[in-house]
Amino acid sequence: MDIAIVGGGSAAVALLDALAVSADEFADRPGSVTVFEPSPQLWRGRPYAADLDSVLVNSIPRLMSIRSGDFGHYSGWLGERSSGHLDQRLGEPLVPRGLYGEYLVDSAEWALAALRERGWSCGVVLGPVTNIVTAGDGFVLTTGDEQQHRASRLALCAGGGTSPDPYGLSGLPGYIHDPYPLARTLDEIAPESAVSVVGSGLVAVDIVVSLAARGHSGRITLHSRSGMLPHVWQRPNPRVSRHLTGERITGLYQEQGFVTVDDLVDLVRAEITGAGESFDDFAAEILDTSEDPVARLRRQIGAIDDPRIGRRLLRESAHQLGASVWPLLRETDRARLRKYFRTVNAVASPMVPVNALTVLDMLDTGRLRLARGVRAVEPVSGGFRVHDATGTGTADTVINAVNPAPQAVPAAARGLVDSLVDAGLATRHPEGGITPADPRVHIVGDLSGGGSFMTTGIPGIAGRAAVTARALRGGERLATPGGRTRLPA
Image (cartoon, rainbow, N blue to C red; front, side, top):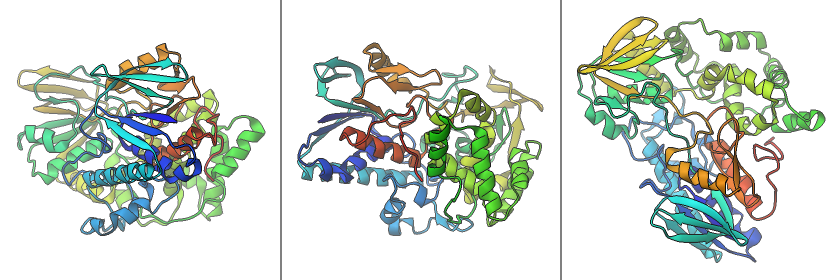
């Protein structure tokens, strides 16, 4: 078994860890693992490269374990490293993203060492894979230096897609297309300059908080179509779901051959009413798009300790079950959910309290403005003109904070994906991404066709990696489009 892992970020780390944990189960047939990664951020990937201390991991430690099912894996590694990083309102340590990158590096190195101890040959090739073709009972991978490498199994862990440039500004002076690492890009911005950030999600929050930490004195404006800010994390209140579980959803799928949005709503309703709370009040709060976003932010900061389970339930289930449930839905139900993308994404990917407080303070003091209905951004002499629902404004610098679409193919991987499709090893999925057409090919991460309409987080990546490791050793076949034959309970 000679496994080629293409991509060396968090998905590759999760797969290596899963292989190492289960290595004893196929100790009689050790093989080789070769990881191919073209960027200098081996194991960290783009999201967890070293950066400013203000760029925080945006989730609590129990949801950031790279080892599926082991919620204490990351917490145990973090230990005393979390000293000085406690978010007082959340009651959880929130460390700089670069420190989480160190966790990924250590996890990958442990996994490689564990595999070697069990007789595996492990290697890393620091270069891009430009072509893959079948050869005999395996594959030949060609790298950018024209070297060829053989493998009998292939796992594509290529990471997230490339952010779009919605207004065609790439290459213009004063436009920053990719803000990360902020340690580099913010150095290009004069402290007194007017900054327009296109987008109002978590990337935009990172930019605003980091500009504030650097003492930026110029006007900052968040421009987006919706003008919706992420919701605010609530203090964790661990509980075990009784109705909205993988077991219940799997049962519905086995009975009906599909799952509907109404099925999911009924399970959420049962969960909330079972806790003695009003489902109608919860639904009205979530679906209300008329509330002023600043008023919503202020209210949610005041509700960090609110014991009601609704938003917590939606956030946790979106990440823990979303990727597995999505393939079980009919297309009509997927279309229904897509209409609520911004609402679901705002709830499922909230900002941490320490950042929310900074954003609110900047809004209250006039250092930050939130504008909705952005229509166009165009270059003018000495800067940019931005058109939105409130009128027309100007900016010295424009920073792109628009997330890539889920299942978007990274620019660096387009040639590789083309070769997989041309070789008949994968097919393009109509909703984005690719689907393996050969049982020896596996995909871990957002490039997996038919995946959720939200970007996959660490819990989803770790779960997929564990299933893929079982499939690689022959213990489980990836039968459903989402890669799971049974959902987590």
